[in-house]
Length: 302
Ligand code: KIV
Image 1: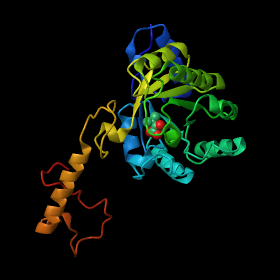
Image 2: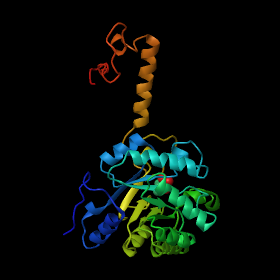
Image 3: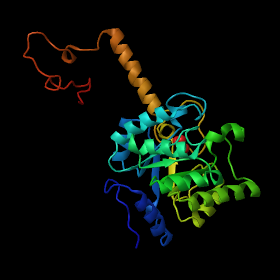
Image 4: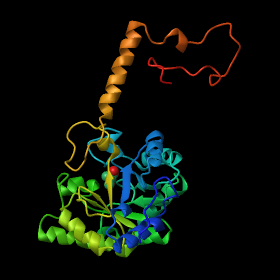
């Protein structure tokens, strides 16, 4: 019988994720599925970790989602390190994976390894993700040799946006599907512990998932992968413009923030914020701010 993972229990590790795949091989039980989301800062990392997400990816999608760029290409190594450190501070249970940004692993092999080591040493990442299949064989093997678990990423690789001519579904023709399959096999053979399958026909993702011994994590790759990942900001409605059809929206946090901010502005303009209760008073004993009574909101909730 397969073991049902209990969100909120033990620390998620690379061996545990591999073990889930092998346990799932002998079972039809879906509870082995690996839940993954992007996280880019301390508060969301904490919320996602406490909600029981298995793996948090500090994705280079933050280039677009957090920094407002048109693609994932501009974000720098230093920016990724800064935000990986913030995520790491918010996490107790989930596996923290850092995405290596464009340019940080495309040159000299030694420099690529040194950049990956920085994510582990300086930011506390437990694994790194790199885009590309057959082309990354040597690098994945080197990183694995250096004790850095690697998550591969094949199919649509957003850092190749210029070479691909846009963000397009991959593997739709027989030849293209075979290339994606070769890429996935190469990533596994090189020693990756998991692979992201992005934007491809579900039938192809299902075939890769059946064939590989390492877990596949799908995004726009159908329901048959061993796990799923989404960009958190798509899931909670904190992005602007069109989102891809696989990005199911579970909340409209953008609207919640806009409403709260409009009310705050009205209160400031109307002179009702801050109230007397939300103000400090002269002539009282000196206290630290924590010793001061906690303010309550206008509904008396806190
Ligand atoms: O950068 C990212 O967020 C990603 C995931 C969506 C897989 O690569």
